[in-house]
Length: 534
Image 1 (cartoon, rainbow, N blue to C red):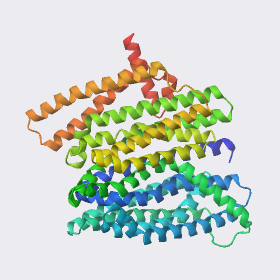
Image 2: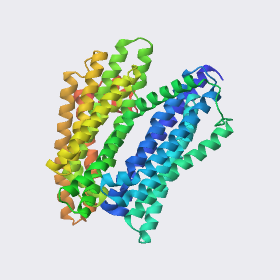
Image 3: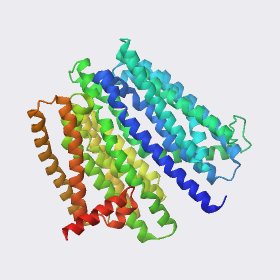
Image 4: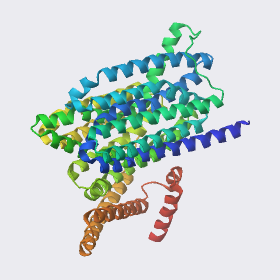
């Protein structure tokens, strides 16, 4: 195979893997809506209490450990067979420790959360730790050789099986009249079985490629093995921490909110429902993040290429573009969701309860839209340790603020604590980037244009909502259908207003738009708008 055809095949693999990851993110976001509709807010609370414990392992395996393994394989001089033996043995020991730890401490974690009914769910979720060695090593090897199609197939299979079991299993047990805790346990088992299917599929596909795993002792010296595993740990944590951040914030909420609400005098049933409604914010935040991360992450490879070619001007340009897109999309998504929140809430989850809290909750999109690309940029520049410490600092801020803020503001305090922790992290990451790579990230022209676009979107959406709700009331359309019509049409109206004003103000150049996925269409629209203007 020629070098050019090999690069073309690799580029196609990157595209397929990107699309697969986008599909997985969207499916992960969407399935929560029918699940909540099946089990209600109390059942949603039960599942969401345990979900972060399981999701930490899934995300670390896919977003950090597999990438770190591919890096260790490609950067080390030892034979890959020997390296894989070392990695497999260490990961199997780690997986066993994690499984035993979570399984045996399930009662302890449930007592911290204030709900002993969660013990069976935590025990069921602990089995996911046993899939870590095989998923990580197979995916890491596939990425090291550039066979990204295999990774994509595995990701899709895992998610499809997981969602299918969660929804069908939950529907079945609810029809049987089982308790909500049983429904939550079935959903947790569905996540574990999804990962098991991923292991089996990878085993079959990799075996066809002649890749074998072995637990035999390696000939690599013990000191060298320890060094390799230390590198693997550092790489995997640094790479995955930005992806883990939102899940770790959810974990803090699982450990603190319900107990704090009960301690404040709320009944157990009311606290369950209120936490379940609060958890509606998770898929809503993912809506904004899927769009923002898809756009900004498409620019990061240009920064890496420019740095390798020692083209500081181009690198600085793409860093500014990354930050500008982060702000533009993050603010548009967050403000848009805030404007339509009561209607979106009712459309997706049957009621508009706690819409004010959820409005505060979705502000996290702005901070996360900055944090994720900034982490990728800094890692591309060779900085892993300091950015990771800043993320951990934000998590500590969230942990320290949660209980205090909940006592002061009720459950809205948890959403406020998340914004304080994430905002703290985002601002310090920007400051750190400017310190290691002095750069002006936004221009006054961009700031004015983005602000005007946001105001135009707000005005257009508010006017539209008044008109459409009046029309629905005139024709006596049922409330949930009214909410659906209002939410969906207002999203399109807001997006059009925001994009039109952004184009008229030329917040991004034609060349900048062209770099982004589907950006050529936006560039053509900007040319048309300004041609009409003139």
